[in-house]
Image (cartoon, rainbow, N blue to C red):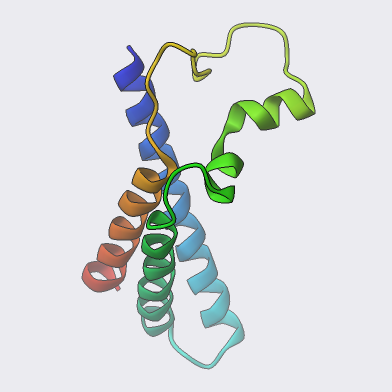
Length: 115
């Protein structure tokens, strides 16, 4: 069960990275003089390279602590009830570096193949 939960988190975060990149490309195309395809290609490649660089930071860094969602939930408080995506302490989890690496590859591929 934990494998499906972690894969769902990975797919969700990769999709969010791709959606944010596409939204920023649309905004830059709207504001600037460059067409959407050019702005999208450049932004996807640059943003993907930044994500790959963040993947190389390593474990137990500020990025790793920021990505720990349970710390954020404790700080903000949680809603009582069952959380299907809640991490259980005995279950292994993906490292933030793996998430950044996969997101970077997908965003670079999006820039090269789609735009």
